[in-house]
Length: 554
Image (cartoon, rainbow, N blue to C red; front, side, top):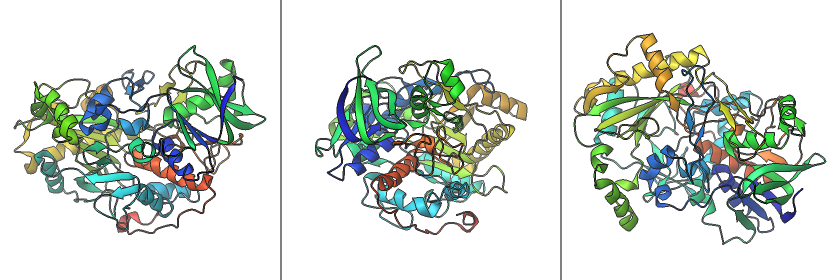
């Protein structure tokens, strides 16, 4: 083992959404020493801080984005799909769309029904609220006084107002707060933006305490290569700044807390000998724990973009073309005003593709721009985009080792659309999005349909178009699931079965994918685990009112 450089009570691997929360909450106790190691940097660039920089961040692999890709996808015409993931302080909360969504109340009721006591909706709601500072104030569903600032999108953009009215014309309810009494319907999104600045987990939890708490040490540029396990206990983490560079070890006297996310947490466990034994032996890795489900159960939200030209020059294309784009950045840097202050993604919907469903299985994000291939294709005209994604995929994929080299990316195989119901749901989502866009409320703004295009109408034509164009909308979970059953890699307190002193705390622990964006649930999970780690009783369950048809399983 390389020389131990420092010793701490806790070593947190990954300064993403969960890691930032844990670094903050654990160091509230001045007697506890914590190390937070992160492969990336501080993420202090203007593109990270400026909400309108989101398109550039997602589109480009670089200092803030790992820019992974999948293996060829059998049911997507053999395509390799781009998989952006955040790198550096804040993790994916530093490059995401800044949408604050918790998922559906029944999602957490389902976790409880799986035998995971303490993970029902009433149990997790107080942790969502503790984390949150909603600018509208506290109510039964929202908190105030927490580190994570939540705001509403700016009023007045015509395309968002028209979309909500069009959805109502199509027969869907209007929903003011997707995290409140009723998720189903169309309405405004709540955003993790504070006074025109992206409010990532780093901005909320980490930056305010760095330098102010001597019991926290942050080691950036530290690529974790292996969890050190001695006599069945995790005792530290090996890391290096670069491939082939010197390896150092940081020791944990209490626990190692793995917060790498749905791709990199299983990757590091596998590198450390925790996973399917036969596969590890083939790579020459000593098996510490034969845990067959590490890297299994990958779930993600697959998405397609229904795009229309716009009849008026009011989309981001006209607002940013020519010299206007650099001027937006300059204005933001000088005054924090102008189009740079927001993410230009202010409205959406949660809908059911079949009336008998007990909760929405489709989500729409409306963007005031033409969005193609993660914004990597630059628009040449005004338009608006409806991102339509399936919320509860039945397909399950894997994360495996492509190499025993810690610097090699993992082999990511989501197996998108492997199940027929997933294909049906995507097909229905396209038709539902088109139906909304065909309503009178959008008529003054709606030009010709760019994608899929008028020639794509039959089931076979839509299915073919989906196979050629569907992409992730960045919500992978489940690869190190918690469960009451012995095969689950983690127990209900996120301890790794078979190893003492090791937990996984991030989106990979979710047994099933929640119905919505995953940043807020990841922060909630870390808030809840912070209490467990500190030996504090859980926050008292809260039974907030929810819509009658949502109540049975909650």
